[in-house]
Image (tube, rainbow, N blue to C red; front, side):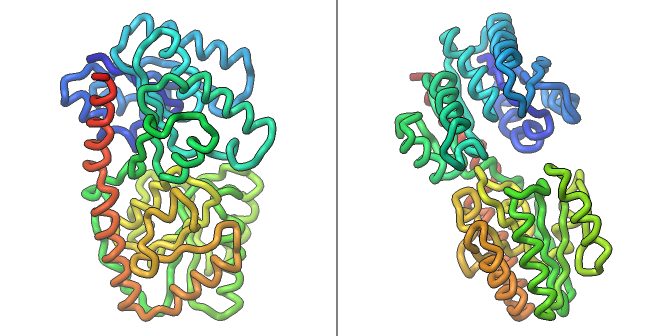
Length: 366
């Protein structure tokens, strides 16, 4: 079987879907990857994929560019003549989905998070809903990464409930993100934030909660790892990094050393599909503090491997972080072990790949 995968970024496809791609190739399928050239293009080729360069303007809203993207997908689908199309992220979902629909090729859509467009009522949301109806309306199966997104899609009547299959995120490779012994420092609590540095990841709440903890005299350090998604935070982070209370790691190709040094992972995000960082930190045996929203709450067994706080509420985040900081060291370490156990039981990459593949194969036969 020929399988055509469309995505908007080589890094995300390789890091989060390489195990799925390897499984499809090992099953004897011919896999094509259609996406822009990027930092992981060669690695995708090394998996055994046939790479097709398809430029995708990830954030642009030019009708001319989007029409060109649709026509490009149609051209390559006619050339490859795949038996199945799998799409990731909004523009490939919409425009490669529409191309597959027009050419009557079975296709599967992955909605890894509803994103900003669906967070508030208005023209942008109406346009996004229309595009999803047009591009994804005839998909054989629609994958989401949490039940909240499934319920939202159903409430908007974008898809029939029986078409939607909820995965446990992209899963985490529990061998790569192996358990790391809990840090020996007992006097300080080292919190870690990993993510794009932007408002909707909750960076403002993180800073506000940190300031309150510092003013309370809590012996804590606040670490940040990630790149600037909104440049306005560059000066803020640089200013805070001059204090011993803050550590800025920047973008890390390998996040594991930073996780090893942390006592607790904090993600006060406003919305997520399923945050991979929660799974990675949990797999390495770190307690979790995160927002009480779908895409985050699934990674937390409340009070056992972490805590949930009210989303967009810096006071709630502060109280939760202080509660953790005040725990005895042995209880923090035990919470980390339970985090590893919980993630391995519910989010192991092998389980997610198996669930994805079996669902895909079932739908193709229909």
